[in-house]
Length: 489
Image 1 (cartoon, rainbow, N blue to C red):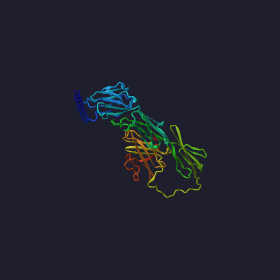
Image 2: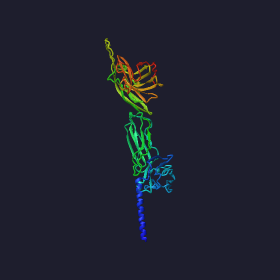
Image 3: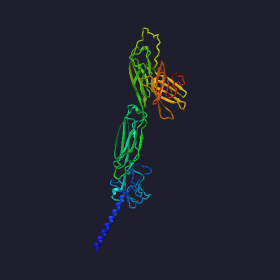
Image 4: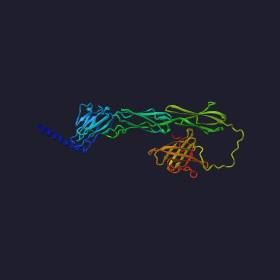
């Protein structure tokens, strides 16, 4: 009898197991995962006011799931945090954990306040489903101890051309192994980059030699995450959106005197010739001449050859300027050979009148130039005693303000130059080029805005017409003109 009863029990158990298997198979075919929504990979800065929430959801009508949370910071093999709707009080972080059970099927884990050790891997799992590897979803929580700390060897925005500088940024974080934040640098080329990453920090730096093309620019370091470290099985694949950008101070490039030359540069000179010395420097250099044979000094950029200098003389042109309180200087040494004054009469000019050429280059732009039109006024001052500096004022009839002009003539060129001006209320800086031509001995200047399609006057048939403002006629003026009695500041 007992054998018959045992047989009945075995049959019943087999039928129950078969029915359960069919039910499970049917349930799995409807949805391979019972965790509908798992946590996202998240990056948060330490001591964030609101903490962080990791999502875990099952279908709202699912009454069979048993959701559990695990974290892998206190135990590399995983430490259980919650079981169903209960937080386990034995977990060392339970005082900072809470469950959001607001809606059916909602088992969100909230951590507040955040500490550095919270940066690790988290997983929510349906303990009642099988097989378990199909019923769990995890994510990385990255805790950033502080935004990147960035420094530079630049002690002032003003830097000297040719100097060597570095910039670097370092950030400390906590996460599971494999997570690597990325620091990317942008700025004026050329620069060299180096970086290193540990399991708790990322460092990146650049080095560069100051060049003029870096003037008025800056460097930026952007820290963000890539896919690296966020590819664990049964885990979220998103990349945390957190990022941070640091920008260096603006770089203002100055340089000491260099590329010095004299004009005119001749093998010998006649008495009365004016010799001028030039130096490429910013800010503009102070220049003086010295006769090395007599120690006489001319406190000027130019000097006039005197009769007592007949013969060979050793001269020095000295240029200097100050950058960040440091004196920079350079010297150009020359043998100045002065011709004797002729003792025989010099033939006078031919009685035949020679007409000036129809078109020629201007010999020198030095002095003041002014142009008036019904719609605007423009004044330029070209000063070769200041290395060919161009200054002035520009005003349209629609402008409220006068616009300051700043520029230079081309090196070793006395009939071409350019300038820029900043217009209030408009976009950025506008640049212009200027050119002077002599038409039958009468000098006239044209001014053209860069990247404009109209052509300014290029022949003597249409002298002095500008394409930046209608009907500009440029002419030389005296210091007492409305162009001011002194160069614009």
